[in-house]
Image (cartoon, rainbow, N blue to C red; front, side, top):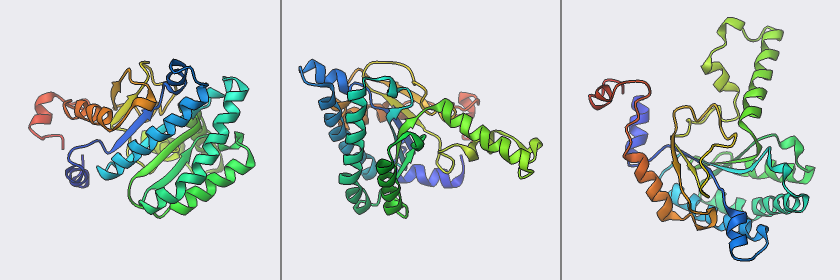
Length: 254
């Protein structure tokens, strides 16, 4: 941890710098209420608003949300189409609010699979908020951790072939530079709602030293209090990064 990291930790009261969340349980939330699954996704958007507001207020640097995985295309076509429509409408309705609150929006994933109109809206939203320096809101859409690592390796291999990258210079740090999260701190806290306890191909490389927190709460029910509970659990843990507990206590690794 650097002096700059210590300063940032003090500013946000020891909160995680980067929180990554799999927002699971929207469909089940709706089904429990005898509603179509898509209604759970609409309710999930409302939960997102509350969590984004809280993270911005608490000086969290990055909030990453897994909105649509590369495997979600396997869902029924009607649901996928409605999700794409919801994604596009939400981008259009929320970007001004994000911009007004100094929040930078970044969409990560293979955008080539999206309709051209959606890609245009993504580019417009990212461009409008690009200069904001508050919370960075990272939305993973058509994203997979294996895809992320693969696209990074393709770029590195191309660089080696062209002579721009020395093969002997390939390192973990170099791979980091080609991931879609290159300029961001790695997640400190990973949360998954909905009762499942797996990471489902989300940020595979980046989660190497992340603290995990699982909750049975379905995503539309995940509120500020639930997030505070997760952050409280995080603050109660000792993060050693390969060192001993005594080294951490004595601040010999800071």
